[in-house]
Amino acid sequence: MLAFYRMFLLRIRDKIQDFFAARQVDILSAAMVLAASVLVSRILGLVRDRVLAHYFSGEEISLYFAAFRIPDTLFEILVFGTLSAAFIPTFISYLSRGRQKEAWTIAGIVMNLSLAAFVVLAAVVFFFADSLSKFLAPGFSPSEISLMAQLTKILLLVQGFFVLSFFLNGVLKSYQRFLIPAISPIFYNLGIIFGILVFLPAFGFLGLAYGVILGAFLHFFVQLPVFFILGFRLRPVLSFKLSAGILRIIKLSGPRVLAISFTSISVLVVTAIASTLSQGSISVMQFANNIKFIPVGILGVSFAVAAFPRLSHAFIKKDADDFYSSFFGVFKTIVFWLAPVSVLFYVLRAHIIRLALGTGLFDWRDTRLTAAILGIFSLVIIIESILPLLIKSFYALNKTVRPLIINLISNALIVLLAFWFAGIFSDTSSEVSQFFGRILRVGDISDLGIIGIALAVVMGQFLNFFVLLRFFLGEARSAFGFVPKNVFAKDIFRFLAVAILAGVVAYIMRVIIDRFITLDTFVGVLIQGGGAAIAGLLVYGLILYKFENKEIMDVVEVFRRRLLKPQVLPQGIELDK
Image 1 (cartoon, helix red, strand yellow):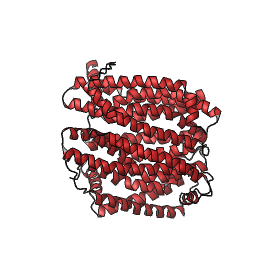
Image 2: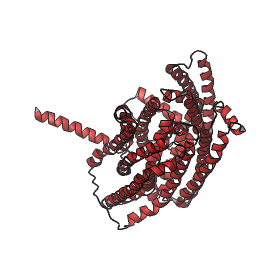
Image 3: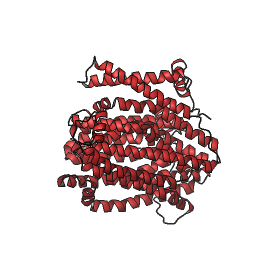
Image 4: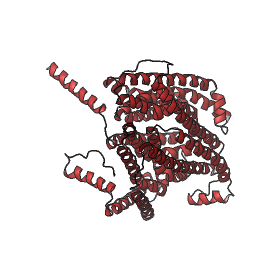
């Protein structure tokens, strides 16, 4: 009997291991795994933000977000630049040639060098945290600067965990294991929520930072079992010998590190400008950005991450058809799903903010300003969702200099416009400020400087997207000798036109429901916003169905198979040739 139970438990263990270590070999399956986990993570992120808004004022939350800036900048420069632009393509190229041992040696060296560099830079930040905080947030009071410096010192430990965690993340993705890397952010948000509910009463405001540390540790720890289940080991290798692989990573990552540095600097400058505006400006902009990033993360980032290994393999094999079908197929899919979302985010922006954040110390002024910024950010949901695909497609082609130059120009534009617009929109007598105040229904609020900063960010992102797309097509033509005719343009414009019509229907439905249900309660806001959204989405789907659009027909087919033939599962995704 004991032997039977032991065998039973071993089989359960093997099934669990097989599930978490399973490969996602096509773009759709990988993207769906990532999208589902990002959806859960973003829901938890909304819970986290709602709890923050309930317990803290806008000024306190602004301080909390500002304390992240410098530690986040160190992490993004050291890890994101190396990992996305250079490490994963190099690692994949060694694996594809059967040189697994060399690949793992390179992985160990790069990870340890990055960690060592982080420790050195973190030590500098630790000792100069007060001066850096004062420089970053000149609008804060001395007591706020002191508390921000304490938070910054604690949050440096968080990024140390992330340096290790994201290298594990990149290795697992290179082996097309997306599930565990995808769910690790869920544990990160759970750690933060636990910190708010448990550490905050015990340690005060610093308990927030302790919760973030717990979340970062869980983000790292949850990936280790699959890492070892698959039989991989990373030895503590630290070598300054520049092998061909290391030289390649340095060559490829250099421009990307500079690009991220420019972006990080622009974020730091924008944060400094926001700190001089009305109280809580940093928090309302960060909250709006977090909500905007929900659809961007679920579809844009998920599809880009899932497509990157496929694009890299296609370039290595010089398979132009696979490369182009993957890129344009994902491009079209993103627009199909996010066109109605972006329009509905604008139409229902106030409902979204009230449902997500309308609680506790988050007052009516903060709610309206956050809704206005979300309305502006809704204009770039599609663009910001395609940008990760564009950038990773450049990296798959081993081209990193061009995105660097474009990134520098767009971020310089954001900084210049942020300075200019913050002054214009802070002036209540400005015709521009009054015009946008009327459109976004915040005209009675005295200081709209943060609206100007949000508009500057949007304009910079538009420039970034269109210039990147133009030069990417040129790089692809040089790599493969041709660029296929864009057969998706007609469908994309149709998606956008139908989405706008769906937005009009959603607005009309919102007005109709408002005659019967008030917005005095959470349930009333939910019914009014949800009813309007459902009406808009139904119009979007029915019109595309009438045109026999491929994407909507695929969705209908999935539901038909689920309902009528549950044993038949759709495999992969058909991309237009």
